[in-house]
Every structure is written in C-alpha cells, then in structure tokens.
Image (cartoon, rainbow, N blue to C red; front, top):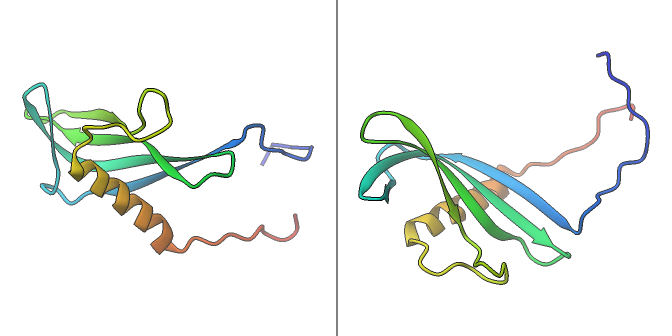
Length: 118
C-alpha cells in the first residue's frame, strides 16, 4: 500500500456532516433559474448535526442538464442566514428530494465493522 499511519484520531469539531447522493429519474424534477429550465438527474444532500442536536439538511447540490444540453451544478442553501432555522421560500419539490435522501440513507441499512485485524 505504501502508506503508514499512527495516532488515535479524534473528531476536532462539535459538528458532524453526512452527504447523501441520490440519482433522480430523468424528467422527474425540473429546476428553473433565471428563466431557464434544467433537468435534474442527481442530488447530493448535505446533512449536519451540531452539538449532538438532531440532523438537519443544510444544502442540496443538483447536477442538471440545461436547455443547451450542457451539465451544470446548482446549489440550494436550506438554512437561513443565521443558521438557526430553515430558509423560507425553498420549493416543496426540493424538500421532497431532501426527504428521499434521508429515507435512502436509512433504508440502505448501512452497517460497518472494522476489518480484522485492526
């Protein structure tokens, strides 16, 4: 492998993040920005848990195809400017994407055990 490591890693922040990516069925979500429509095909939802509080969605990054056929990335901030609540005016369809990502994370049933020997 050519890599060595020593130490006892410790999380340095009181904030934990998780990113959940989901593929969207083509044609199921259209994003409109500046009068242009974009067909979303992937979403990456960032969740955060601060100071052992419940997880909350912080941001969604969409990969989408524009009317010219070029792919681009669109971001939606889900927290307000004070980071103490959700941003108003976020379309319901975006919140559905967040719910799909959250459900997918739980439904996958990811479990992990360290390989032997550690």
